[in-house]
Image (cartoon, rainbow, N blue to C red; front, top):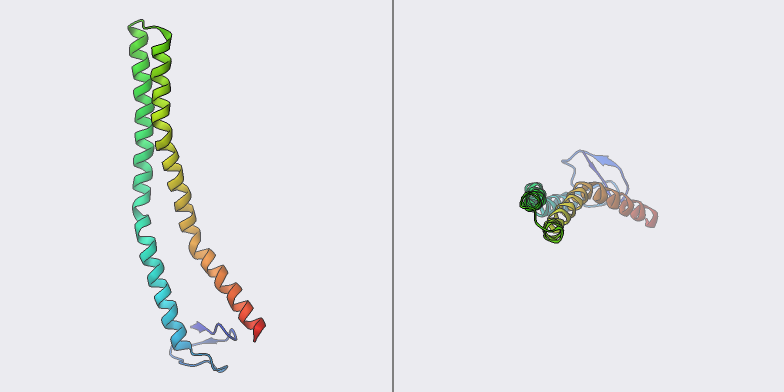
Length: 133
């Protein structure tokens, strides 16, 4: 079934023109083209969860490396400053990895919401078209 964006009537997919005169065949072609374009845009996002896990893992490895380094320095009875600097360096290196992983999480959430946003925009557009008619 296809819904006419001009009047809102439902028709079988085989109908070419709506009773109100709107060209449903051209509308279906535009909808298919938009769906293909969206699918092409969403494809790169399929690798983002892998990068998110990889970045989180790298951040965790940096933190663990800093803690292990600090423990080795404690075992060697090093002064306090090298231990603090080792932990600070681990934090400085790990924070960008965690920040990038969080940015990817936000991108994934937005990409999941994109179809809902597109449907909402279409409904608003249809309502505006109906009110103008």
